[in-house]
Image (cartoon, rainbow, N blue to C red):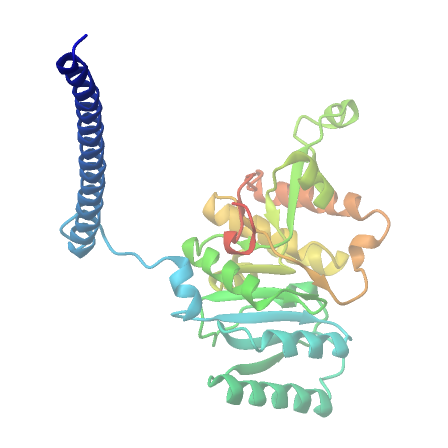
Length: 349
């Protein structure tokens, strides 16, 4: 091979490497252009989405056919209308003081009515203590809470549902003096009640069911009912009552209980010193044909156990249920499995 051929070979090799380099550079440019194009497309899509959301948010709700509604959580911070606490007490002034000292700070509270059925009127020291606490709280929170002690001559559990003619609120929070709920829980239950103001909304569910045992079936053709406590509710997953020891209901039911509910039921409650809460559940269910609403809430019991700890409690309550069914001529209670839960206070919803 001559020198010219050798030179041609030597020059051919760099030419191939140059072509390969140019092709690789061109490929990189194409990839870069493609990447830039992809970013531009994504950026353009993102801008379109943001613009669409902005436009939709700017359109009046009436144009879209929506009606603006304030949710219960919006109303929670500044209630449009408050509630009255109707607290039942009996010779437990220390518990009464503790309860009122707690509830006086709840933002939706408008007034407090104490159901007093003791033979002696409240002492001046107790009244002074309660008024001082209410005055201090009113000054601190910038609102005036009214306190009234409704003194009853007769010692009857019916007193807790006696009609009050000068109530300023529609909502009543019926509570015993030995249970305390956080104000946030009370306000949540209040807003649940405002979504269904004709029904009872409470923290303590109970249930009834038909006794289908052979003994019961042989006694009579009519159904015989059994009253079930908390563990029955937990086991069956349903309830048909919420006890008035901690429940919201409309003030109109005080008038119905006092003036229109069968007098025989009130007489039975007075005589047996039991079941006024079941009587109220029957009354509301009979008027609405709807079940109550159970609100999940943490109960802080500050007193000793009540009549529910006594022997034969379930049997006595079952007797009340069957007696009231006979008075109404039917079973008005409606069972349900609905439970209202404030999802803001739980980790997983």
